[in-house]
Image 1 (cartoon, rainbow, N blue to C red):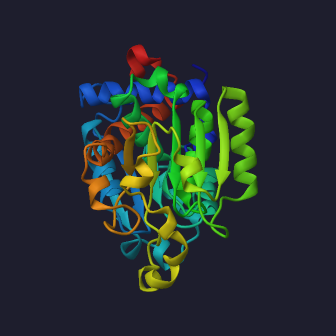
Image 2 (cartoon, rainbow, N blue to C red):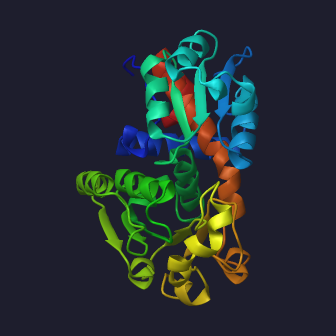
Length: 324
């Protein structure tokens, strides 16, 4: 392992083999929540929130503690970042105290600037463009139920709904890294950016996968091993739900749409979910739904990611055990 400061800012910051290594480590943490403790001391991890959170806050706070560390949780309202302090200045301060920086924020440029001035790993815990930690957990869930990490490259995944959001972007890139066949469906005007699709296609070709972007939800779901969706209205836009949701009703994940996927297809949702809108109760609360395992896997996947990044920084592959 060559010494190198690594960050996780978007899903293609890691290679195919590195993704497998992180996911296999995540499986180890599923089996034993105290498999590795790289932050024993305790060493602090700064966990910053510009947006509200339940799963990200819980999984990172508990995860850092289980890794032997101290989670320093900082909300926007209680930090100088929230009052306009430059990101670079915050990075220069935190990097002298914390061993990793985790940030849930808005623009992708913010986490990129944090990483630019940081001398410790920086993790994107959600931006407007990407949600890499969520997708690592989602892929860990597929591996849990469908034959392990080494079988992911044989899987077809479908995401339907708002295909112009961070989840769609992350499924495209992470699925391409995994060598999966990735299908994304959304209405016109709500499709992913061309540059992200182009990146995904290039990476998929390298890893034996494929990318399909369509406006037809049935085409996306046909024969899929796993079906994903997300809320149609992003955080802060709830007051506009009636207007914003209109283009998406044909993309609701219901029993009929699920019937086009494989008979044993899994259903996943990053949560919070709005039953009767992007997904029906019969699907999210039905036998094909694995959303609660998916939510738990945020803990295991993020612990694996933090451990992996620290192993790189410290040139200590022993932290990864047999997953190295």
